Image 1 (cartoon, rainbow, N blue to C red):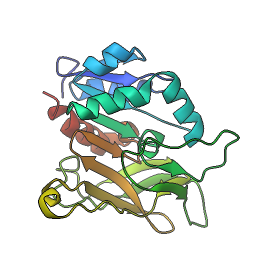
Image 2: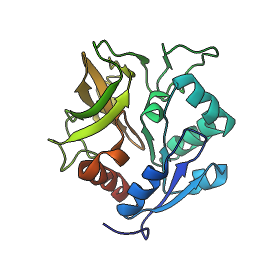
Image 3: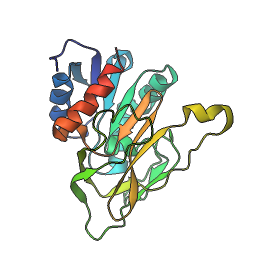
Image 4: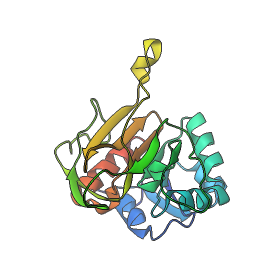
Length: 217
């Protein structure tokens, strides 16, 4: 693992909380990391890391204030990699049932609604296994490992199943379970996301981040 001599990664600093751990983890796996909300830097980087903690709707409000939806959309349209983590993954879906005084729709990159986990104990906090989707590149080499989750809401059904000529580019969906199955990660061309925190998942999380960083160069 290197120390910041590889691809340029922007950790998008739109007010989602303490994200220094993400910067340190990405640097450890060889990325040259900038923590910023500057739109031009976020558009130009080899990879964009979109964090997210707390309330779905509050995160979206912060993301919109920093031009996040436009940046993410432009990057995806240009085939430029984006990795969303935790609520940074959830905002990529249509919406959330999480209570809010100012509810707002998600970015709609994938169909689905983020809903409260049907478990006796919520939040889901701690280490859990993930069942990687077939052919997953993110989980290559860490298929049997556990990852660190902290969340009360998740997408629990997946409905995007391309057919015909588009079947070859169907998203790779990985699953975990807490009171029932939920989407733990999605890989969809340049857009990837994890419900868990790879930057807080020890050696397995670093390996996963390294897998992502290697796709950027």
